[in-house]
Image (tube, rainbow, N blue to C red):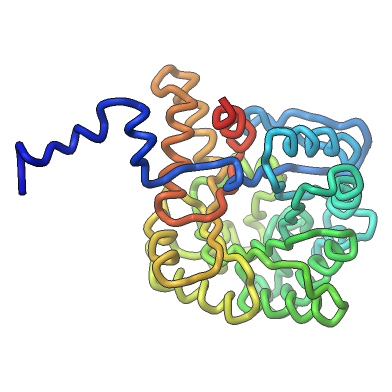
Length: 328
């Protein structure tokens, strides 16, 4: 059968019909909202490079978490900034660290909210790299030991899910073993399994104060984050992380890697997260500010594309704005 027996526009003629036959629907349940926390009290400081995003202290982050929960968003992803940096990033596993304190405050005041924590050293090291530098390279195995200490400190504070983002080989196994050995068997791991060395991280690196120091001999993170041209390698990374004990796997960034999300969805049965990163977020903001796009429409089109590609979980700075729109 063909035209005129088949007229595809019949199913597009009204919003009600379009909604009735719609294949992909983004809901508030899909969203995770990233938050930045640093030591101090009474802090809510705007992040210059990221519109409508802030640095919170552990006390003020509670009100933000309460607002997030009221919007129906079920999870937040915490990133921490230290008072002092050193070559090991030792404040990352401090019992009184900003992230550890924020976990306790959120779980005490908003217990229904799922707390996920980024596990990495880049914001904590004086080099801005995701691990220990040795001979102009990141020492993979030594870094894994430290990442396990970070994840364990988050578990001791009451976290629900730890999310290693460093891209060291074997770090999921190291973290899983540390959690099991210390009776935190119910803490899940959401691994940044296919994290690419992307041009879209710029605003985040300002927010997390984690730009890599070129004087180390490593001006970028291309020796450990993935090359943007590699798809098969991304799937291999995901498979390895699942084998090592990851409960959820992630593709980051989302927009330039929708094909990776799609192929991961076809191949793997576990939940798949995708990170709609800072550069993607700010491109929409800047384009909307210039009058080139309508912000809400562009936001929802992007989020829908990520869900349509196969993501179960979407980490996005648009989460609050999207939640408000979805409630209308």
